[in-house]
Length: 402
Image 1 (spheres, rainbow, N blue to C red):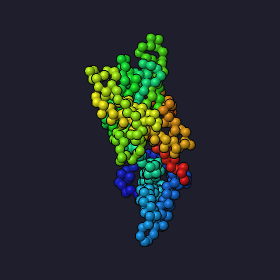
Image 2: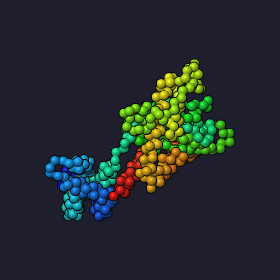
Image 3: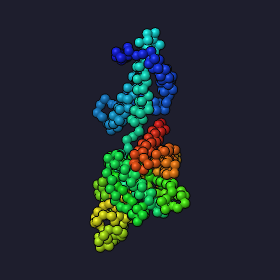
Image 4: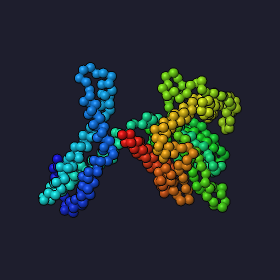
C-alpha cells in the first residue's frame, strides 16, 4: 500500500522530477528478471523448497530419529523462510506499484515514486545484506581474544624499530575498540626497537578482527641513522593466534590440541634486564610440543608459575591457529587467493613513508594517510575490508555447494 502522508502532497515539481529519474533507474534494475536469476536468490529459493519438502515428510505419529533431524533442519531454516517471505512481499508490492508510476495524477504519481524507491531499497538490501548474513555460518571463533607475535625480520635495527611501531599501532587500534592489551614478552633493544614481542589482546571478536594481520609487514623509509637519505626496506613478521581461557590440557578439554605426554618442559634462569631478580631464580620457562616442534619461551613474569601459564597460552594459540588454517585450506583448496592470505611468508602490507601511503596487497587497497594508520585509526579501514572479503569468500563457498 502507498503511504498516505501529507508531506507527499507538498512535493515540488522539481523534486518529483528528480524522484522520477531515480525511480526510472531503479525500475530498470529491480523490475528486470535478472534479480530473480541471481545465484543468491536461486540458492535461497532452493533452501525454501528444501524446508517445505522436509515439512511434508514429517510423520503424523511419534517423532522418529529421522523426524527429529528434519525438525532441527526446519528450525534452522526458519529465519531464512521469514526473510524470503518478506522479500517476496516487497517484490510483489513493487510490481503492484509499477503501473501507478504512469498515473496521470501528478500527486499520485509522486507518491508512487516515493513508495517504489523505498521498496526498491528494501529488495536490494535484502539481496545484498540480509540473505548473505543468514547463509554464511556464524564464526566459531567470534568469542576468542588474540595473541599477537611480532618478530623483526630483514633490516637489522630498522626492522626492530618498525616492530616497536607496529606494537604501538596494534595497541592504539585496540584502545579504539575498547580492548585490553597486555605485553606478555618482549626483547627490547637499546635503540628502543623490539627484536620480538608477544601481546595479549582481550575483547569480544578480537581474533576475528585481527587474524588477517598475520604475514610479513614491509616498511620503506629513511632510517634516522641514514646520512645520505636513502630509503631502506625492512620487514616484520606478524602472527595472530587465537587466545583460549584454558592454559593447560585437562580431561575436560574438547579441542584435543595436545596432551602433557607430548610436552617437553624446561626451566631456566631469566636473561636480560630485570634487576636483582634476574639470574637468582629459575623462573624462565621453555615448552616444546614434540609432534610439531613448536617451542615457546617465556621469562617476563616474576614467577615460574606465571611464565608457565603464559607459555601454555601461547602454545595453545599456535596449535589452534595451525588447526584453523589447515581446516580452511582443506575446505577451500581450490581458492588459492584465500590460502595465500594466511601465508606467513607472504608480504601482505607495505608502509611507504616517503609517499605517505599504506598498501594492502591482498586487497589491492591503498590509503594515503600513513600517520592515521600507524595511530590505529585508519587501520580499521583495512580490518573492515579484510573481514568483508572473508565474508564474501565464505558466501561464494556456500553458493558453490549446490
